[in-house]
Length: 424
Image 1 (cartoon, helix red, strand yellow):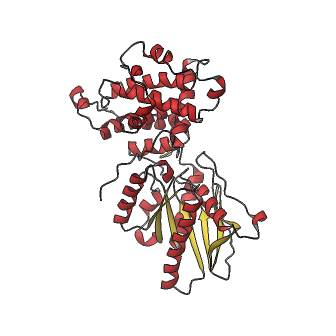
Image 2: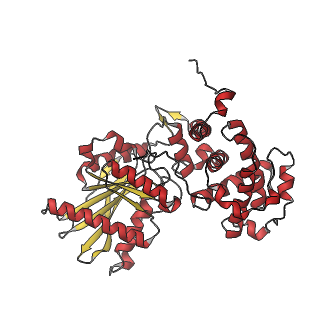
Image 3: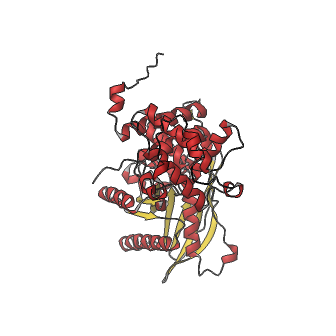
């Protein structure tokens, strides 16, 4: 088989838009993922037999639950649509509510734009920060309103079931735990309550479990764990669960589901950058390069201008750029500071150095070769910002990448929506 790679001409590179440039960088991430994932029997290694079993179990359950909470990552609200919903008919998807999670990692204007988009598609939609108690309380009130509407239409219902569905690491277990915590404030069984497993690694949820949220006149304020609905290994067994005799809401947490194949390179890169894949699939350095391309092509770094001093702005074409930044008036961080890259002082220094490198760049950032040269310079200055000076070049690049990805994923380096949201 002959494989032909298309390479843009120099003139085309100079005319490329931000979207074109990001697609080229996303291709580098996608190539790394495919190389490291490997393909086995028409599926990639991220789509395990366990994930296939979970997908089948969820698909069977969706038509019989009352509500499906379609959980999305607010940074990738389109890319993070679970593949299951694309394969199911509208009639079999029951009552679907889109929930934008991790809204603390995007700006308010970006959240509003996403909400308008989904409202225009006639979906009930709610934005949530799983770690904000007031926001979770508002979300519970919103769900209660959906339940009241259902009860009004079907008054014979005494039990309501809701199932959380989404890709790995989108925050299903964190949201389930938060609903659990807010609901149990007045519970007398506090000491006997359990939590869903929350982990920064994708794929930690290994079964479809449920939390029963008991409804009283004052709202949702009691939570009890009931036995697992499904237990998923490579085979799926349906276990019994208890249904209360008075109105209840059951929230079911499910394993994260990915498609067996991902054709769109941008979706592939977005999954990798936001943590739906394990970082080892693409490699931390490649992911950090992709994030820096997003940063450089955005206006986020321009917000850090006040952190900089004019005399430090230099051209990244200067061969002595590393020594220049190393000898700047900024002190080299102490060993104590370098142990924790999340300290405010370290984060400010990272922002400052990234602004200086990006704002002093004289080349065309829409040219992939020049963009990569800028990113290389940013790696150099970040080694100074993180006070890395006692490892090999490869080890330092890895450490820079890991620290940088952590700051991005915790919202310390700006707010980003990686998908292009159609204007309503």
